[in-house]
Image (cartoon, rainbow, N blue to C red; front, side, top):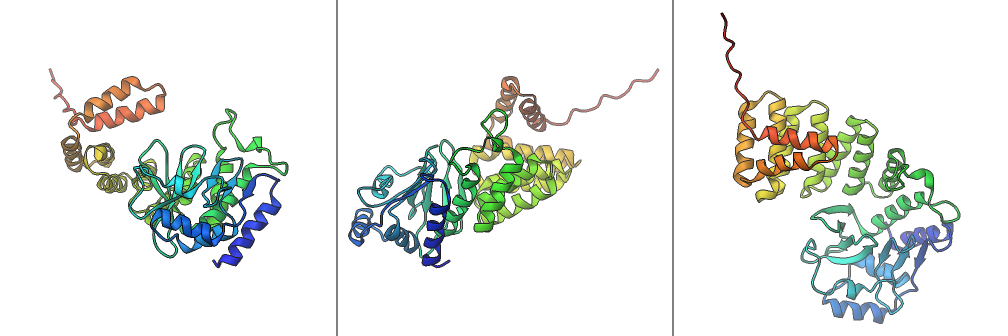
Length: 328
């Protein structure tokens, strides 16, 4: 997408939405952009530099998301957002370009038109959330504006009764809107899969999780959710293989739990030989895993969480031998 068309789309969103929902900055000067590049010891990705030349960052949806700028009036300073220490999930060459109120960060890699990655606060999750800066931002606007009415107030019907979580149909609409703007966003495909799963549409969920895993092959979570959906569809052997592939993406003890899932799925498929191999590898990676899972069973407050932990703990134990029936 060319820069002029992109900027026109952004201006259109500003004009159409309720006042104050999107607050773009004034254009940054060439000197301000150059000063930021000197401070960061790198050139800015061309699409992002062009955006700053028209809008020096932006405050989106009442500070829910701040796009970094380079001038004194920016809602969030680009140089300040990238001062050491860098976020632990940030890879070499990546530049933080936005921060959410939740603490999540969004970064661009190096190159002419790099993808956008989402670094989730309080976790080790990295998501390929945008195929480019311009398409990512278009998708953010398309998705988030669904939450607001013409007066800029939250649409209460979008939320469950507890007010915390979006309803599944609304989450589905958001994901579909985002994907129309950026069809190659792994995170949006995953969001679509979660919404389909909540609505009981497991075949569609499986397709969405599979596409997310294809677009973000280093991320274990789309692969994990694909495997869980295969298990729910009673495709146990396929699920076992998918759980094993997930474990390969998470080295060491942290990936042992995925191998427990694989053992569980192989057992459901009647492949006790393969279940034993997965069980052995899981315990080799983390000898304390069986005890941790038994503790999780005892600590679980929700029946669903308890049942899941119990099934994984059982999968790490050899099958119980049936005692012979004594006949008189």
